[in-house]
Length: 358
Image 1 (cartoon, rainbow, N blue to C red):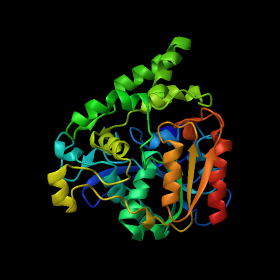
Image 2: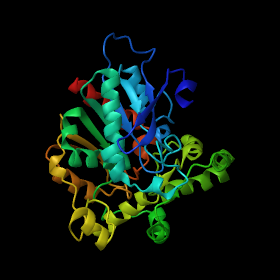
Image 3: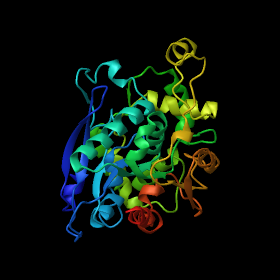
Image 4: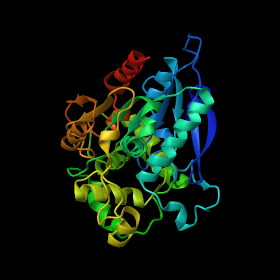
């Protein structure tokens, strides 16, 4: 509906993973502002935790990267990961069952992202895609390329906006408040999408100064207040967030913070021995991450959700990387998508990277 409301064509596609999850993806196949004929290079968007594909679209045609790419003659695909409002189906497991929610970003990476790349390849007859990821989206891409390195030849460029990998220096109010609860939870649906509640919070955001102040709390618990945030987008953000996750996803990130490692899920001693044949889970083999061009990492000195120290450590662990440092003070985690200057500071540089590759 967001895409169609801006007079762009939209397609809905059903993607089935090897382990039976039924995912919904969106496609913007063309734009009235693209005047080139022939094959359009495919771009896959991977969203962060608690978000869905919607998060990339909220800024509208002038400032949202999917629309800008469509106008620049790219074939735009947006994934919705398992557990989100758009991807709560399985070929045999009801989402009301706990078994449905036994996944973290690990399964999303090795299964969901791979399934979308395979599906796009079959639909477009293109051997490789460009990838844009934000936060956990970058995590899932790193997981895929490290665990299933054959997919490196299927990724032309890898754009990682504020990627969550090493997390030792992460600190947010939301993490501080919720960590004890999350660590005590079994694998269940968490932060699910409630349309009535989302509509209410979105409406409150529109109620003048008091409403905006209350809704700014969303930014505070997600890393801090920003001088760059396009606050007019906040009602739309809250109308589409949260989109639904498994409690194991934030639990896995908490483990990364506590261990200082970028490694697989820690099930405890007994299950680790059974699954991994070792006491502690193995690290992700980042030396395996080598797509068809250097990985491009965009990060900020003031992003407390994905701390600059941790991201620089990630950059050193990758075989080939280009670091794009955002030095503007108070540039926070969501500014990579919703800053007032995102078109100039983030989106146009990404389009230039894609154009240079092509």
